[in-house]
Structure formats: C-alpha cells, structure tokens
Image (cartoon, rainbow, N blue to C red; front, side, top):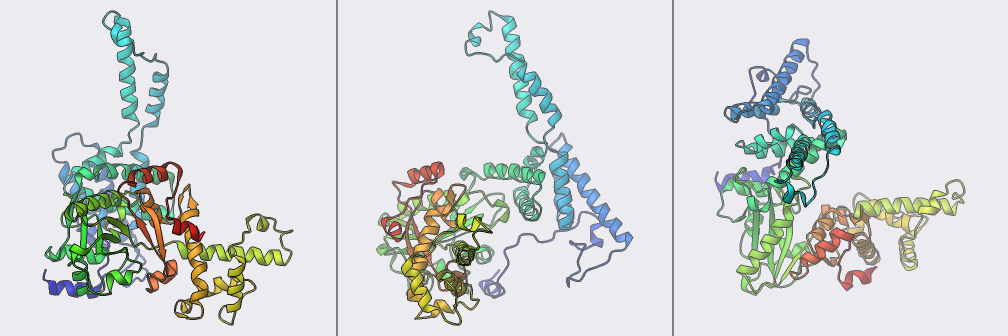
Length: 529
C-alpha cells in the first residue's frame, strides 16, 4: 500500500477494532448476517421460524466443533478442526458467542467430584518426611506408601486444571491462534461488563493467566518503528494511537523522525502488528506541556538531548487488558536508549490524568449536597451526611470562588460554584482570564491529593498513575494547562503529570508500591498538599 493510500486512511481515521467478520463455517452461515438481530441499517428484523432454525443449527455446529477440538487425543488433523471453530465463532452473534463461552466455562471446567475424591485420599495418606528418602531401600512398606502419596498428589494437581486449558493450549500453538484467543478474551471482557457471571469470570481469569505466560518478555521482539516500515504497519500506529490522536501524515512523519522514537513489542504469532507501542521525544529538559512535544518548534539535535520523554503508550489488543506488557516495554526502551545515547540521563513521562475530573466532580457533588443538608439542619434525619462530610476547600479558596459567583457559576457555597464551573459543557472557564488564576491553585492542590492520597485497594485510584507507579516511577511534577485539547480539559482540567524513572530506584520503588502502596513523590508535589 502506498503512502498516498495511507494519507487517505488517515483522513478516514481507521477504527482499531479487530472484530471483523470472517468467512462462514458452512453453507448455513452464508444465509445470515453476523448479527442476526439487525440488518445493515440497524433496523430490527423479525425472523421467521426457518431463519431462527438456521441460526440455531449454526450454533450447534460451532459448539460441536469446539467439543471435537477439546476432546481430540491426537494433534494431527486438529488444525482443520480449529480452523473450522475459529471461522464458525466469527459467524456467531454476540448472544450466541456468550452462550458458547458459558458452555465452555461450565461444561469443560474442573471435575470437582474427582477433586473431592482425590482430596479425601490425599488427606488420608501419611506425608513423607525428609528422612524417608534414606530409608526407602531398607523399608519396602515406606517406599510403597511414598509412591502412593506422590501419585495421588500428582493426580490432584492434574485434576485441578480445567478441561478448557487443553483447548487454550491447542489454540495457542495453532497458526493465528494467539490472535484469536486475544479476540475471544476481548469478547469475554465485553460480556462481563454487562453480566458479571462467576463462571465466565473464572474462565477470563484463567485465560488471562495463560496469555500472560505465553507473552513473557522472552517471546516478544522489540522493534523501532520508522517511516521506512511498511505502510500497513504505519496504518496500525495511526489506528491504535490512544493518547494523542495522529492528525495527519505530517504529524505521523514528525513522530517517527529526528528527535523522536517509536518502539513496539511484536510477537511472532501476530506478525506486522505491535501488541503495544510507546512514543518517545528526545528533549533538553522534561516537557511541561504536550504542545512542546507535538506542535511547537522543530526538535533539537539529538546529540543535545538529555531527556527521553515518554508521551504516549498504546495497546492494540483489547483482549490483553490487565497484562502489563508496558512494564517490560518501558524498561527495554530505557536500556536501549541509554546504550545508544549515553548523554541521555533523564527518563520521564508526560502523562494524562484520565480519572481526575470524574473523581473531582463526584466529590464536589456529594460534598456540596452534604454541606447544604448541614446548613438546613438535615443531619438529624440523615446522620451519614455528617459522617462522610469533609472540607474539600480551604477557607481562602472558598472566599475566592464565592467572589466569582455570577449567573454562570452561582452557588450557595464554594464547592457548588466550582462544581457549576467545571460541569459546564462549553468549558468556558478554561479560556477565561478572570477565572483561570482563581482555579489554578485549587485544581493543582486537589490534583496532588488525587494522585497521592486517593486509592483503591491500597493502590493509586488513577489508572495511569497506578501503571507507572507499579513499574517503579515516582511522581515528579504536575503541570497546569499542559493539554488544552477538549479531551484534556474534560479528563483532567488540562493538567498533566511528569513521572520520572530513576534507574537506581526503579526496583525499590516498584517493590514498596506493590507491598504497601507507598507512592514516591518529589518535595514539590508534597508541598501542594
């Protein structure tokens, strides 16, 4: 594909979906669309009994193919069966896929009756001691007892593995199977967001564990993506860029040109498509705004760079969610850049804070409601309001916000004024010379609180913060109006954060965060609290 065609694709803004319909399993699938509930215009279709019967037969054929693939004792000939299953799976509607995955989860799970029986046997056996090995030859009875113990233990270990493990392993070694498993797990995750069934949750957990094992760093190839790579690969970079969308061909060329780097992790089973990629800017200092990275002056000569700034990291496979490939990618890239450019001494990020405004608006809404109840004497009828009430704003901040109160931001208290300002759909506050100076210290202080103190299960509430902290980074600096795009204003009030990876501290910081949830941050961040 030519670069000209790539430019056309850029204008079309390719979607990053891998869920394209594939060829049908049999003559039955040619008679129906991939979603039997809708036609191409989205209008509801009333199926007659013959069509519904055909749909049911297609599902039955796919399910039988799955059973054959799982039950086959020989590997020879199974490739054809797996091919048939994959094609049939793609022909099913999402409801039939859900039904099929539920059958896989329930009917090919652990044989619990066998496990219970083996546990009874295991608990009735005498555990061999460490001294028994020396006495085995002199005591045939002990040798027989130990043999029985280890045989039952092995049987129990084997019985605890679900039958669908064999199915996953066969798919993994099948050509194109790893990509298919990723798509299958993406379907699982989509289903679980609407219907959190324990059996499907267990199936997902097991598949996630297996994918994490099969995608270990030893199996992945690091490749620097350049303008000279095939256009088909560059298309995917455009399609999957999730943090700062690539606006045109010149934007893409700049990101792959002088003073910039793009690295991707590839797997041999999914050729020509990165599982995850990271974009790097070589700079003199740590950038404080995304405008410096994407739109400002031409990049500096690479030999003058002292900082490698990671400004975007994107995953291309929804089915690999929760598998931390980024951790290994960042460490590999740091090692590679350090080796090629010894003069680069600082490794930092310029990261979004995607959950900040959502958290802040929710906090302001609940606390302003509690404040109004207290003012109206409502705490007697609703004692919980006083229990969960807190002072979100400092006295000086309260006064400054009340001084802004007008028709567009009126409120009975400072929290209500701030809530009204930030909730406005047009976000006029972000361009107001009168409002911005008042909001800056408030939003920056609350942002520091959000990053350092707001947690979920002992870890940072913000997903991007949690990602970098568990990889061993520290919170270095938060930057006011660093991303003035509509997305940046709505997500984080335009604020972005620099995380820094200090090579001598990465492992220690990662361990302390993982063990106790400790978040390492610079004195400048702590001073904002």
